[in-house]
Length: 115
Length: 112
Image 1 (cartoon, rainbow over the protein chains, first blue to last red):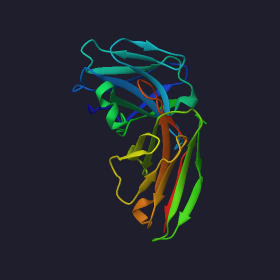
Image 2: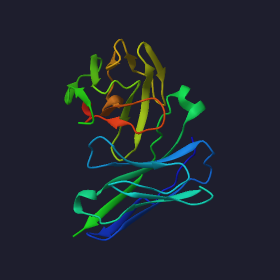
Image 3: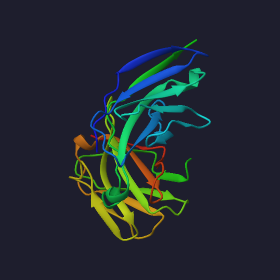
């Protein structure tokens, strides 16, 4: 699976948009971009995933560049409860299913939402 | 709880003792995983299973064994616990194909 690079920490004011970047310059054509977050040692929580089109759900938006080498997770109106470690992960599908399509977690970005 | 429970929630072991961690999911998913997370680090995959009766090694399998006799259960065993196995253990599951993993609340294990 492709390696990802994220800033170790970011701050955001409550009510403002939080934009979390991720670099995955070695991503291959059948690899999806997934975002998870982990709130204070709880189990990781799925946020969103995409292949090449931008995606939006009730939690966040995912913007993937046209060359797919980077992406941005956007939390449109951050709250204090969004303070967490955010993980960007690329994961292969299709032929990669035989390996269980494991998630490879890096160290993520610690997002702190300030009042 | 993301359709998954982990038992026990906390445990303290002495070096050399054995124990089994149980993960149970109620979503009938094919794939199940065991991860460990050490302080300040991301999760690392120990073992995983792509279906009932099958298991495979992950990134850090040494010192652990697993079994998947029933589709809904995935057991992680420590035959002879070591202090290096002090960690938080997370179980996860997902359906085959594109989709997210659902994580349990974790088991906090201390080996003294």
